[in-house]
Image (cartoon, rainbow, N blue to C red; front, side, top):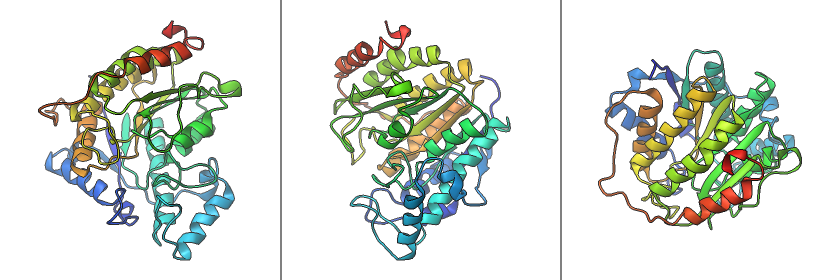
Length: 350
C-alpha cells in the first residue's frame, strides 16, 4: 500500500458532555486515546483539534433552526434530558457544535489532499439525530452535515455512507432518502432500537434504490458481515462509483457490547475496514472519512478503533484479536432478501 497520511479528530472538550451512569460517556473516548498512546501510534497520526464551533447556518443544512435553538436554550436552562435516552449537560450544545466542526475539519483536510483518511473521534454521536429532534444519545448528525458540505462546498455528486453501527441510522436515512446523490447502506441488528431500517425501506422519489438496509438477526457474526459486504455492498460500490466514502463507525456489533446482541470479533472490524479501503482505492482515490457513533464496551471499542486505524493507515502492525470469535452463521437469509429486493435497482446484484 502506498504511503498514507491518516488523521484523527479529537478535542478534550468532547469529554465535557458526559454522564457517569450513561453508556455514552466520556470514558469511551478516554479509553480509545489511551489505547492509541499505549500502542505508540500517535506519532503516526495527524491530530486534528477543532479550534472553533460549527456555524449554526452549517448545522442548519441538516437540522431545523427551531431545534438548534431549542438545544441551546435547554442547555442554558439546565435541562437534564433531551428525551428519555439522550441526556444534556450545560456544555452539550457547545460540545455538539465543536463535534460538527471536527467533522468539517476532517472533510477539508481530506478534500485538500493534506490527508488521505481521517477517523473523527466525535462526541456526542449523531446518526440518530433527526432534523427536528435529538434521540438515541445523538444531538446533531455529524456525518450528514459533512455529506451536505461535501455536496455544497466541494460539488460531489456521488457520496456513499456506510453505517456499520449495530443500530439503524434512522436520521441519516431520512435526510437522504429522496435523492440519488447520497447512497445510504446500513447493516444493523433487528429487532433493536430505533425500530427502523426494514428491507423495503429503499428510498423515495429520485432516491428509490439508493437506500439499502440489511436488518440482521441477533447473534450474527463475522462471516455474516463479511459475506454481506463481499456479495452486496462491494458490488454496489463498484456500480455506483462513489466520489467519497463516509463510514458511520459504531463498534456496538461487537460480541461483548452491553447494548446489543451481535457477535462480531475485534478482528472482524479490521476485515470490514480492509474491504472498504480496497473500494476507496478503486473509486475515491483512497479518500475515506470515518465518524464515531456507538460502541459501549470501552475496552473493546478502543481495540477496534486501533485495529481500524491500523488497517486504513497501512501500518501492518499486529491486530488486537479475540482468541475465540463467536457468532452463528444465520445471516444468509437476510443477504438473499437484500439481493432480491435491490437487484431491480443494481445490475451488479443480478
